[in-house]
Amino acid sequence: MLSTVLYNLGKFVCSIILFFFYPFNVFGSQNLPKHGKAIIVANHSSNWDPIIIAMLTYRKIHYLGKAELFKIPLLAWFFRQVQVIPVERNKVKPRTIIDCMKLLKNGHILGIFPEGKRVKEGENVEPMDGFVTFALRQDAPIIPIHIEGKIRPWHRINIIIGKPIDLTATYGNKVKDSVQKRIASQIMNEIYALKTP
Image 1: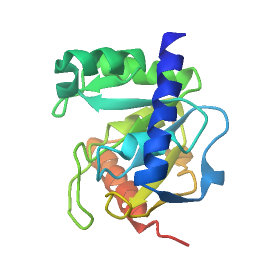
Image 2: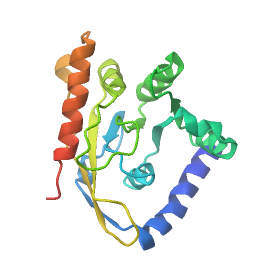
Image 3: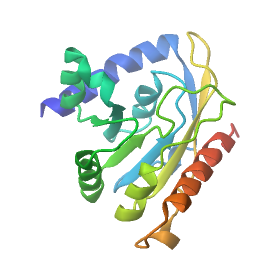
Image 4: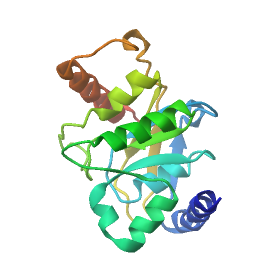
C-alpha cells in the first residue's frame, strides 16, 4: 500500500538525519502499546516532534495536522498519503471526529499535540480538549509523552513516555465541557511533569 511505503520510507530517511544531527534518549518505551487503540498526547516544541515520536514505535501513528498545511499542494499530497487528518484550529469539523473515531475503533493509534502550536517550555497554553472526547467515546488509553529540551543540531534531548492514563471511571458517561477542559489541562500538566529518571 502506497501510504505504508511512504510512511516507512519517510521514517527511514528521517531516522538517518536524526541519528547524525538530532540525537535523543528514550525513557519508558515499555509504556507504548504493542497492539490495540491508543491516543498519544505530547507537548509540541518543534516541527520534528511528530517524526521523533513516530520513531518510537514500529506501529503507524495517525496524526492530526493543522489544516493550513494542506494548502501547500506537495505537503497536502504527502499528508493525505500517510493519512494525516486535517483539523481546524478553532473548530473541529464532524468529518475529523468521524475519521478519528473510526481509526480508534479499528485499533489504530492517534497522535495529537493538544497545544495546537509550537510551545516553549514554561509557556502556558490552554490545550484543546478534543482528544478527551475521543478517549471517552472509544474507551482508548492516553499515552503521555514529554519531549524534554530544545531540539537543535547536535544537542541531545530526552523523550519520556509516561504510563497510560486511565479514564475508565468516566467511560460511557456524558462529561460537561468544563470538566473535559479540566481533564485536558490536567493531562498536559502530567505531561510536563514527566522528567528524566
